[in-house]
Structures are given as structure tokens and as C-alpha cells.
Length: 187
Image 1 (cartoon, rainbow, N blue to C red):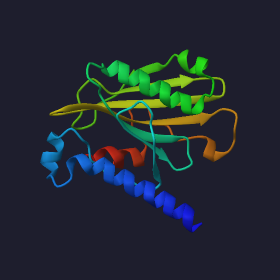
Image 2 (cartoon, rainbow, N blue to C red):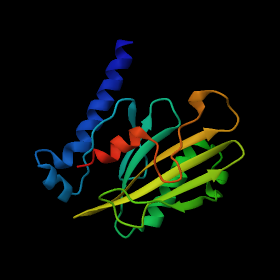
Image 3 (cartoon, helix red, strand yellow):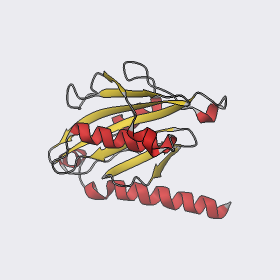
């Protein structure tokens, strides 16, 4: 038990340090002008390695939900970032790669959060046989970087266990308290 606690503590400590490393020692105003993004760590959130992305994936404990930040690569469009992130998130829940590649998302525009680029927030929903997946994207621009952040969740259609389904945002992109704390903590 002590070993498990130490491993979890070490991962959380390292993740917290690495997320803030780019902007350490800066004022909040200076941090906003830098390439990095600082945010407050939240209870129950576990950082997870996210292959092939410049950014961070945060899982919400044992629930099939979480949050993310992805930085735009040189020459990469926002649509490409959203597509790559959506496929990666869907791949966490759908184990058949062919099905992930063939997903058709239903897309809806959302109001932007304060500080975000206007007309860039969208909600994607995939309604499959075994699950429904929701991925919500917002875009924020800093002086030297553009990044996409968002929330995702899966609801199981085959399991009655509460832990097999995450909470979905409503049609206005609201209703997830931990996500609201997350994006409001950016500096």
C-alpha cells in the first residue's frame, strides 16, 4: 500500500512540476505570454501519458472521462488537432482500430469560454452500438502558442455500473464542475 501511494504521489508531483516548468518564477501576466500553460491540479485527476501529442491528458479517477490540453504543431490546423485528439480519445474506449478510423462525429458549435478564441468551441458526439462518446474542444491563444483544451466522457450502453459511464456536458457545454475548475485555473 505504501509503495502504491509513493508511486502515485511521485507521478502527481512530477506531472505538477513539469506542467509548470516552462513558466516557473513568472507572474501570472508573464505566464500568459509564454509558450506554456499553468493550471491548478484538481483532486481525483490523474495525469496520463499521451503519445504523439504535445500536451497533457488528465483522467478523472476511475471514471471514463477527463480533460486535455494539446498544443498546435507547426503548420497544424485546429481541425487536424481536433481530429487527432478525437481519434485518440475514442481509441481509449473502442478497441477496434478500424472502427475508430470510421467514426462519424455529430458536431455542434458551443459558446467560447472567457479568454478563448471566438467561434472555435465545438462538441463532438459519437453514438455507437456499445457506447456514446462526447469530446468537447475549446481554443485559446497565447502570444507564442495556440492550444486546444477540452473535456471527454464515455457512457456505456451495455453496463449498468456507474463507474462505466462518465458525465456528459449539456448542449451549452456546461454542467461539469471539475472541468469548469480546470479551465478557470489557467494562468
